[in-house]
Image (tube, rainbow, N blue to C red):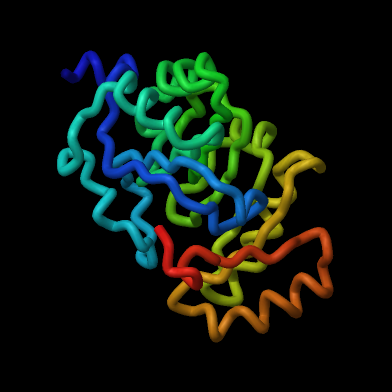
Length: 205
């Protein structure tokens, strides 16, 4: 099993579901989400802490994931946890062989593997992204928990390509406090856009 995990033929699958994307550039679009278990980034405000321990999630054949995914959508979002803890090459190649678009949300703390049509980089202070991820990120999404996160956001934005879409998103538990600050910041710095977890407002996964 360890070899299969290393080779990317199986992944620790926490859950997979069809829903409306709630955040960032593609919000409002239908997509099939594949949530991979395992993460050691350890954000204290993470809303899927149950994903952290990979051993709690069954090693699942990527062929099974692909067959299920293609029944629902032509856009597949791989998230976590931190999916790049695992070899994403075989999964993404299989999805693209089925003419499915592959999107990922990652902290960038691990080396990029896989073939991606869209890369959403969501950097975290505790484990910063590897330098190599910045030049290929299509979207930068920075979570705002307190005032220091605006300076962190600018540090991260300075490293991505000019074409990368920039988003500031309130941390859910602090949204009432930080949304006014985000609004003011975007008005003063219009290269940024706001992102909200609209799926939570709509009470969908």
